[in-house]
Length: 354
Ligand code: F6P
Image (cartoon, rainbow, N blue to C red; front, side, top):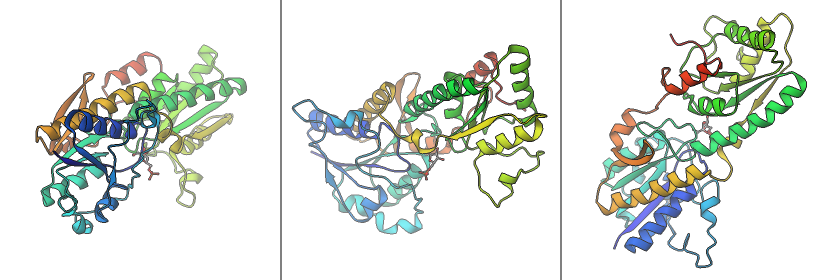
């Protein structure tokens, strides 16, 4: 008989509740363990708060809200706690009588929890989640696939209005310093330009590409996907929106650069998709990943295999030491990735590898 805790930490994403459901179902039905949720990650540990979860996902009437619910029923925080600020958390897991803790998080929060676990000698198993898909080793994190589909949906909508007005639509997507979300959704959503933090671009080349699309192929509109983490071009003058007095996103920056360089000002509109990308019902793939990760994490607890993270590689779940995962985080887009080559083969401008 075991008592295990589960928490969600860092920014939320669709699929977290699916992981909680999978952990609860497998731990309860297969092993008869008690599962408790720790609300608001380290805040719940600090206040030693736990919520019984064994009732969730086991509704005999067959209605299972967790499967399709976005967000996290446990709540989350993404304020970084240093080890120094977390001294009062170190003993929490033992004081709460937890035999193991399953933490669903991104590389930042998992790194902090690992430090705490090593210091407090807790039994920690990690599950990766993030729409940025930048956790090391794993090819997929919970939430990424749904976010791709959300961006694709937005690109589909924007394409029609762009084509009606002959406009350039610039769409800024999340991802922090990684371009996975921009690259995947840009290809799948029919972008003409995809700018990633990992690959240098030039506004001049973007304009040339847009001109060629128009003059050679008769395309009067264009879709430009900009990852939020791209940097201003070193050689480009900082435009008004970037002079420090106004904060603006990189989508607006690219719009200003295109306008600066083009002879006739283009009709450009900028959409910042923002936290819409973190919401919604989890996709089919995210549900499968959540189910596989959650059940495998329970297996790791059953095998007393701690300080590891479940990972997705080649379409299945593998397991890697958390230390290895963190040492390879954040996982960035490889400029020679086959998807980058695919984008170029499709005629999409994705910057120029150096
Ligand atoms: O890491 C996930 C993420 O959604 C990033 O893509 C984005 O930059 C950030 O979190 C936004 O965080 P917050 O919840 O603090 O607004």
